[in-house]
Image (cartoon, rainbow, N blue to C red):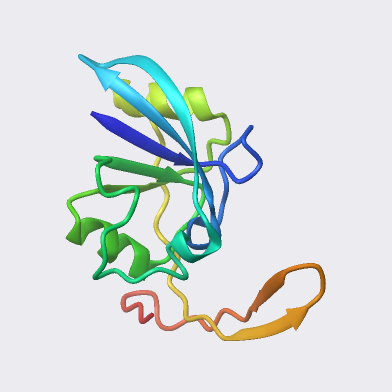
Length: 140
């Protein structure tokens, strides 16, 4: 089994999965962590910039743990049989171990639309204005 954890800063769990380009990939066997490797994606491979209809470097994981993600990404992952988990836990190893022993506290995925304004500073930055729909229906 493989578990991916978003970690843009390489030390803690990242909140925004869609733009994240760094993931720790944990190799799991019989409920134990065998090791972990850092996967670094190009900007074009981030979930936000890649097509859900194309193969993705994370397609071979069974679980994705993140500090936050929208309903659109949850549906995309589910379509590839990847379990999407949102948690407030920020410690990478604690989150994976808690997932494995069934104690990881899960949060709901975000319900929002994105309006993007592009600025040209050092890199392409996205400003998000979140427009919340009613609590029972999310649109992306």
